[in-house]
Image (cartoon, rainbow, N blue to C red):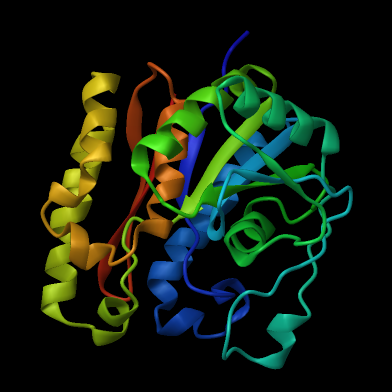
Length: 269
């Protein structure tokens, strides 16, 4: 059976998809919208479910949402009132959640279940664009609060079999995430993002998966790394996607800019 790819996608800032000026960068966000729309068109008839690892959910151990009808979780601040009433009513998938639990448990992880939290904006914002019909079941899996790269690579490795079961694995984060850098519009932020983006792309596209993963574990040694990610929660979903790649190659699937900095997305397999 042909395996589906695993993805790392940029989800942008807050509810940008319904803001008229697209976070002051309509061109950059226009390209991101087109990419996410094309992603949905490519897979909506090929998949049975989606597993999302969002940058906006961290727990002490991997935690899986088991709800049948997840609510919305508006985990952003300072936006217009109407953005706190958005609806995207994709169903949950407790059976897939149980498969995720079994795979992670068999790999030695202690697991928690969660039933109430709902879709955070790292999930519902990009998926509202990619899959606006909200018919494909979605399960969310948390990051681990330590943000340890090796831990998240191992989580992804455990989940690799799902790619042969018509489950699309999506890590949702940002290849650059420094709020001050975004807001500054400075040449130094743009330079840091370019240095790190080039390193990240070269690393993801390394033909040897062992070397790729070793370099990802040591990501802080990369040029521009700390200035691109003062904290690595928006990079950690990429580690899960890379782990789920197994021995498959990675490629840059999206390249653009947002608010003056380089932003990329990646496809594994």
